[in-house]
Image (cartoon, rainbow, N blue to C red; front, side):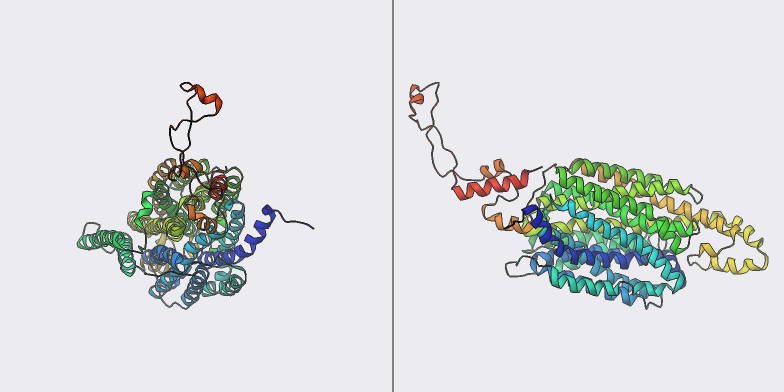
Length: 586
């Protein structure tokens, strides 16, 4: 008779459940990345300007950020398997509907609904992983997620470029549908989560409204200030004042709510607070630079959508290699802080170096800069969630996990808005400064110059690859300078992220899953070490001890009552020892 070791049995239990999560992740990433390289073409065909381009991205990120903590709280209250299936359905249906958009306003609206589903996938996948995989063992499975990310992130833009060039951009929005159906079916068959105890549910609707109001007003102001109205204006006063008021009221409501949307007690934990700060910079680097790198390739280097997808592979390669290698090393040695520090340094280096690029910068250097930035994101993104889950209260695992993801999404959303506003402002200024050069180049085109001039004066994003060379070089230089200027915004935020990482408490990773920690919570020992646990136990008996230096009877075994010692029964002692080994190993 053969037996299966725990080391062999665990992967066999985990892998089938992971298949559904992997497919869900693939669907969400594919639906997003497949349209990334074709966005300049989409916005151009729908007669949109740079502001519309930014809002097509920001709308998804905004609703993703707002909905992430909501999904996280729902995960602490309801069936997590049903929730993630609902999130996939919302995401894919909204994505398909976006394919029928007739103008940028319609596209932005469907992208906003798409973000609601994306928020659920971002939050719930992390929470469910904590249910079935311990923090210490998580790294060995990150390679699978890294592979899915690589296929979706590299293959998505390439596929999107091919579809756009061959069939038209609308077909990009339909390509994820068959994968979504497969994800739902496989999750139904393979994703089996522990049964959660039923309890009375109370949803914080007022908190949801106030959080949505605060974040929306802030992002709308950042996106439109400097273009639709001045930074110092009545609109700025109303929007910023409204956002601050909504944020203050949100804090008041959360403090009084019995089931707060974002439990403010989480911020008492230094790990959670510092991880959220660091996540903001990671989000800005991940979302902001990836969005505008694609635009740089097309607007500053004249690439087609397909070529732009290929040219951004170095960043994805850095992210993939770093996440797989670092995840494996963390699982093997149990040390995470050195890798997070290295990731923070790479974020700073990559962001700064990308702010120096021009339209004619050697592409080998641009590739190196992208790789460094991608490696920084790969080392920090998932591991910040990991260390928060390692110390979070199992009863608040959904809120804690989604909290970090929320701030990462918020950082990305604000980052895209701020970088987009800076890009649009800089481009407008440079077009004005280079007006004489453009006029001379257009006049040199003869009869064809009128159509080119009309295209540039329309206010829509130009299709640079189709412009005559004399005009194209000037336009590429303008957009290269503008995009590089926007990358510089990420540098100070990345510095703050590194400082936060340096101060993170260096706590060992536990080998217990969330479900096991819940089962062990009877003695409140699942998340603390033996010395800390013993300090919480009350004295249950006295043990007589001897001081050999003062009592000659010590050698005879007689005891004098000199103090009390905490004692526990044998079952509790064994449980304490077991949990200590799981929590302290590594």
